[in-house]
Length: 233
Image (cartoon, rainbow, N blue to C red; front, side, top):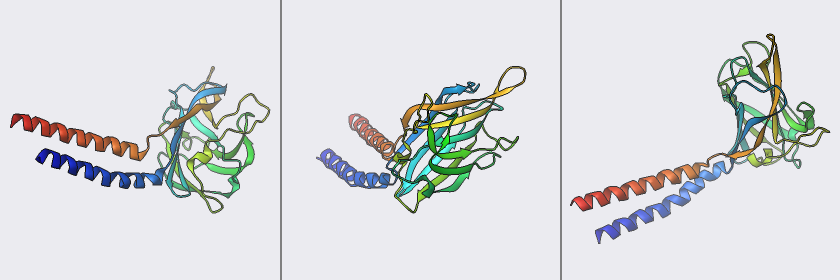
C-alpha cells in the first residue's frame, strides 16, 4: 500500500512540474546552429570544420541572441566577414544589435544591414553583414566568440526569421549564410581566403528537453534505489 501511495505522489509531482518546465522553456522557443563546413570558393582552411559556428536562440519575446564562434580555425586564420539573411517580409534596417559578451582581443565587427545589399563572393544577396578586423592582433580567430542580442521596435523577432536562403545574385549558389575566412596558408609564404557556408541547419537542444531528460533520470534512479532496498529488506 505504501509503495502505491509513494508512486502516486511521484506522478502527482511530475504533473505539477511539467507545466512549469514547459512554461519556462517557452522563453527559448527556438534554437539552431549554422555550422560552416562547406567551401564554395577560394582556399580550404587548414583547421578542422566546422570552422565557424553561428547559434541563434530565442531568449525572450522579440529578442534573439546570436553567438558567433570560430573554434575550428587554425593559427593565423581568421573570420573576416559573415553574412546572414532575414525573412523578406521584415526590414533588416529596423534591426538593433546589442553587444552582450565576447572573448579574446579581437575588435568588434562593423554591422551593416539592408535588404539584399551584400554579396558573399558574388554568390547570393544577403541582408546582414558582419565585417571583422583584418589588422594583426585584432582579428577574430580560433577560440574567439562574440554574443549579440538582436531585436526590433518595428516587429516581433524570432530565431526562425534568420533561417532564410539568400536571394539569387547571378552566381551558382544560394545559402542560408556565408562567411569569408582569411589568412589561409598558401604556397611561397602567401595567404589566401576561402568562402564557406553551412550544409544546412542543425537544431540545438531545447532547454525543456534537457530538463525532462534529467528529471527522468532522477525518477529512474529513485525507483531503482527503492527496488534494491526493498529486496534487501
